[in-house]
View 1: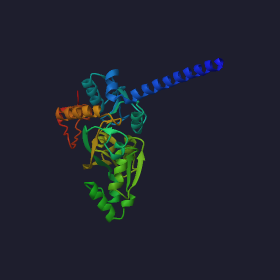
View 2 (view 1 turned 60 degrees about the vertical axis):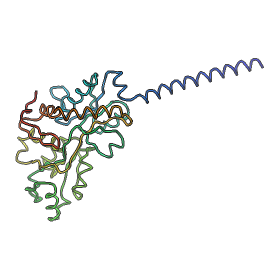
View 3 (view 1 turned 45 degrees about the vertical axis):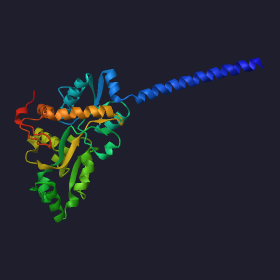
View 4 (view 1 turned 180 degrees about the horizontal axis):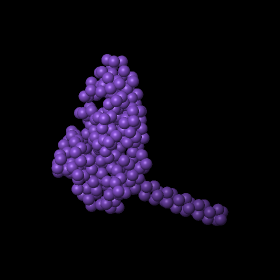
Length: 304
């Protein structure tokens, strides 16, 4: 009987120890999960920033170094926080939100358009950049469709409908980007071809695989300027943008303290002209870009 009691007590002690160990582990996990992104950043002195793999002039490689408007903005944010920015470049733009949700990065600063679908998965800051969707038109293919002289998207679509060619329009977009969802609302009968990168979609438009590409005005104008030798007589950007587009910084759900800080930071970006100054570092000389918030003046061309 005493022998049985000894083992019973021993089993009870072991059971209590196991419960305590599990409780301690669970508590530690709860504390980790409960810690806000901002507190983690401040304690580690590192801000892990997810950026766009290749989106000129916001994030791209130059001479083996990651540069661009978003890079400058992230470095400025880290400086104000008193920490160091660590840039994480995914294989694909579409990997950014899953990486944020998996706690592999602290924030996304990647020229990411604020959309309702994305807002279901992440929390967005107030916009730090305002632009608009524009059309990169292949003039040769447009002439065959009778829209070579069209000056805006409404004229393009009305001519195509009148001529019974609306269903012959082929539009290039980038897979997973906001224009892919926007195009069907403005060109409901068009065929939409999605390409893995912005550059691939633009190249397809140049080669004639698509009649036009829809993307942010600033990318289209920068890309066209850089490819002017081949594209001068074949492509044109149709002004003005037909749909406003807003870039926001994205954080994990529930990080209101970080969102509050980003609201102040983004207001300062707009008020002190930082975004215009950063843009001027990377825009090709003589490129003229007028967005809803910023007019890039000639003083900034050539950069510093």
